[in-house]
Amino acid sequence: MAGRYTRESLDRVRDAVDFVELVGARTELRQAGPRRLQGLCPFHDERTPSFGIDPVEKLYHCFGCGVGGDVFSFVMETEGLDFAGALESLAGRAGVELEREAEDPRDAARRERRSRLLALLERTAAWYVRMLWESGEAAPAREYLASRGLEEGALREYRVGYAPRAWDRIVGASRGAGFSEAELLAAGLASRRRSGEGVIDRFRGRITFPLCDERGHVLGFGARALAPDDTPKYLNSSDNEVFHKGELLYGADLARAAAARAGRVVLVEGYTDATALRQAGVEEVVGSMGTALTERQVAALARLAPRALLCQDPDAAGQEAIAKAVAGVRGANRRVELSIVRLPPGGDPADVVQREGADAIRALLDRAVPVERFQVERALERSADRDHTLDEARDIIAPLPPSVLRDELTRLVADRLALTPDLVASALTGRRPVLVGTAGGGPAAPPPPPPDRARTALARQEQSERAFLAYCLALPDEGEARLAGADLDDLFAARSTRRAAAYLRGRLRAPAADLPAGDEDLARMVAELVIRAGQLEATPAKLELEALQLDLHRLDRLIATARAEGGGEGIHDLATERQRVLDEIRHRLT
Image (cartoon, rainbow, N blue to C red; front, side, top):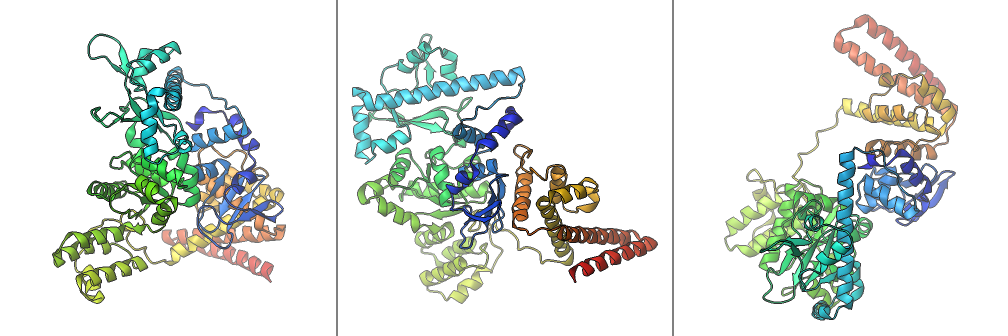
């Protein structure tokens, strides 16, 4: 999708963005050098700043958690957008008009059709909102929403509206605006009459909740009936060209910035629950719309934040929803850490806010427990058979790595079953565990293999390659001369640094200017090198020393290859050259 916009458009957006202001909204920045600002990383908890930006090149990197990239990467990471979404978002803020590249006529026609359907849905959502607040017919809808403790400000944020009872209000208004019957059907706003020709409004006499993508585009509606005999109670848009319920989380467009700041996302079931929590100041809330989580919804959760708090009704249906959500996350194999919010009996999240206030729901969220603890507690509550309960607990606890959580759960089981902790700990290893997941939300990973010499050498080599490139950036005149004549395949062993060197050759003075759209790996590497360069007290002598270190690693690789191939005489020549380089390094270090 990013390829639809011209390179010139991308460059104009990058040039127009005040990167210090953009990043400064997430973390306090302080000057740390002529072209470097630093602060606490907005992507992980830390007490000592390890996060830095280059305000000229508009690149960032954290030496603590490894995140990094350019201005577009930053918006993608903090707001849960793809590259095109980040580009469009920044263009809108900076007032830059994006230009599209020449398109295949069929692609252009599809884009134009989608654009018209989105425009139709957008104007319909706005009309429903106006009906809710201005129509006399909508008085019962306003009364119902007020009875749930929901205020106008929060409802307007979600663009909650009202669809009148008449059969053809949307159909007539949309036709008058130039939209066809086919477009009304394609957008899910109309249904064919059961008898005769023509179409009627799909939503009638219902409170409407726009269902939006992460950029706020209205794709469909959920609609709640007011009359007791009007079934179904909730009527959603059917899946169509633009709307796919299994891909969306209700309110993700409103929650994404808050979720990035908080490092968590709160998942509730319904529309009113989400509205109530946002009204209570919990802005990082999204709704699952009462269904089991799909893989795409789990992916949307993971884009929003690394941790998800499941805040479901405490009744049997709510507990089942939690079980399905956990299964959905683990089945999707996404790294989302799951915690469970324990709600009091007899109410949903909106009820807690209404009865006990905003502080009460926030306190419950702060006391959320890891999903494994929740599962162990349920197992302990469900069965009176001690052996069966121990088996269930073992399946949950055994896959956990050694940790405080594992010890706590072992003691909990021991206390409840009147067993010694040693006996429970022994039982946990009594048979092969069923892999149901870790505290991080994915399958239990095997322990990492022990480090060996080859890996250690490779790590040193790659660090040497990064250091060399950082010095080339810090000293662009000397760096350009070295990169221009280098055989990059011979000099760089690591693919990441070899790619970075190839890209940087001829671009050391403006390293961010030509970054390929959407190439996050390259952007991350270039960002790290630029931030490293900003920390250096670089001199030509230091660059020469790094070049010698790189040559030493190159010779080590050649010697290892020659030995593997049995090249005796060649090894001697390579060893002689290696000794010469090593002597030169020692001479420069003394």
